[in-house]
Length: 220
Image (cartoon, rainbow, N blue to C red; front, side, top):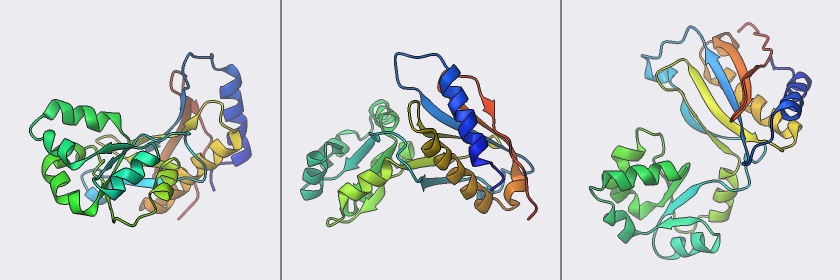
């Protein structure tokens, strides 16, 4: 691992100690800058979800699109539900659909509603990388919700960089470091040139200044 975990923990502790206290819980954000990547090639654009070792935050913003038993299960777990009638009611209402897309980080939908979801929400959720994962009726919804508390969306757009929320202020620095190294390890495996495609790494809080993380590139 080209990132020294002990050094990373020191950096995270210093950020926590020197950052101003805010009247809201700031996110801890990771930025990875890349080099020598041809973004015209679709395979070089990372767009995926990654389950991290530790929870990013206590509550993940999840919307379950379902009716019947699956909707009941979701409500019992205090998860937001969009039922079939509400879904159909969004037809043609672009403002409401954009608001929905912005309100949630992740969407899941019952298998039977996926064609309808595609027709109504596909044009809004698709470009944002938020198309729902289909789930069958007998799925252990609780496990899915728990996993999403540890899930980060990794998405590279038009610039050779990637931003990811890896935790929140007040989180144990070792757990934050584990989440950060998990993202970097994934990128090293995913990128064609491995560590040599990574130009620089920064960590910051929502309102804070970026702090560079030392990164030693290996050969591949």
